[in-house]
Length: 349
Image (cartoon, rainbow, N blue to C red; front, top):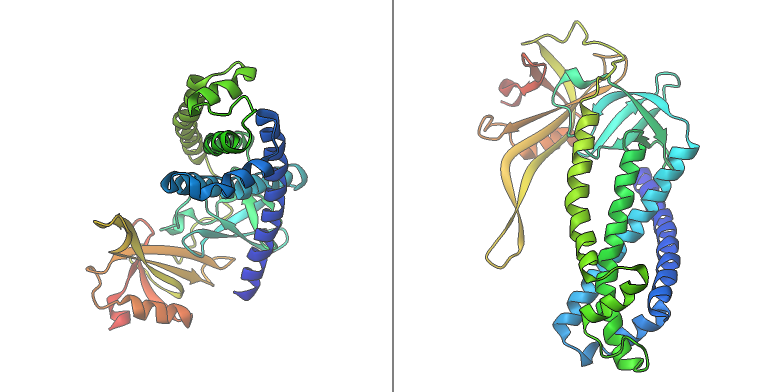
């Protein structure tokens, strides 16, 4: 666990450096071109008048600027890393061995015996033995023992992500424009944008690009409503492509057969809700997810998940499952007709 945290921290640091460099250089050039004033001067001017302007307005603009800037920094850094991996790394054929957590998968390279972890962007945990053994093309990432699916690095996916970051940049610039107009009015009275209203100033800065406020609205909202459905349709089409498998179901895996596996993960599933004060609440749905590792059924260790409602197995408490998972204890399960798993109540009595 400590090694994994160290790798994630190093990756985050690298992402932060790359993202900050790209964002700072790009924004400096863009802002200087649009307003003919360096971004640093505009920000200092805007922040120096924080208490002279409407505090709600200042807080809202600053919050939106910070959130969009953070998304741009980390998003662009990941985008550059993925593009670099796409160009420089040689694709590997890996075998899918199941989800070892709700958001991460395990793969193996059959040629080298090397294991890889991969974050599952679109695929939920496998709830059946039938998904195991699927062959997928992956490339190595900057983090040791991690890989990315070539599907997520495909040119259409990179194109969709690139468009999303362009859209996010326009959102950032929309909020920054409000801060810039206020700062220019207060500290740069000779500037052409001084004392202009927001939309009039927007028309002025867009005029050199043969655009106006209406074009900006179409870009901001139209791109979002077209981009998200298009990306979703492409991912669905990709998921329906015929898959290849490295191995078939072992003869030991039969419906109604009892099998023993090592419990490695147990958790409750929550849903988000808002109370009267608009605070986000995490409400326990009663559904539990359990991940079991099988070391001897396949040529490699595999993972299969199962979900159940606590009402179906009242004697199986979440605390007991977590205790067994922490100790990597074996539990007995029953294979269902669809090759999913079910808990055996007698194993917890």
